Amino acid sequence: MNMRKGVLLLVFFLTCFSYTIAQEVTGVVTDALSNEPIIGATVMVKGTAIGTVTDINGKFVIKPTSANPELEVRYMGYVSVTIPVNNRNNLTIELNEDVVGLEQVVVIGYGVQKKSDLTGAVSSVNTDDIRN
Image (tube, rainbow, N blue to C red; front, side, top):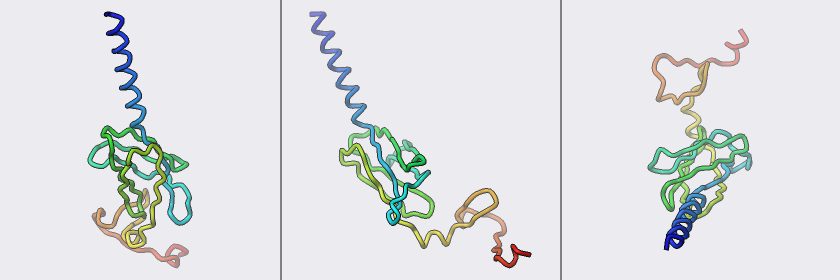
């Protein structure tokens, strides 16, 4: 009878382990027009703090905790999307440029900020001013 408990326990752990492996979702985030990978896009499990960032090839790996989550994908200058996983393990996600949103981006000396997030003075510099 002790052997039977051991076998049942082993089957239980193997089932749990295979369930954990099945939860891993991989994918790639690309530009919809050029099909180039997007480096540094944020991939989050909707409604949680679970997230990751795409690598130099636009690839990501994420382990959601729910059975059928939705992934939110964001990147500056692109329209954010929400993708249902639908029991898929490998996703290809295409982002479209957000042309209107780019008008609200301000390049500063040490990074990029949204215009609405800035405090203080903002000025524009044209190419003639830079040459001088």
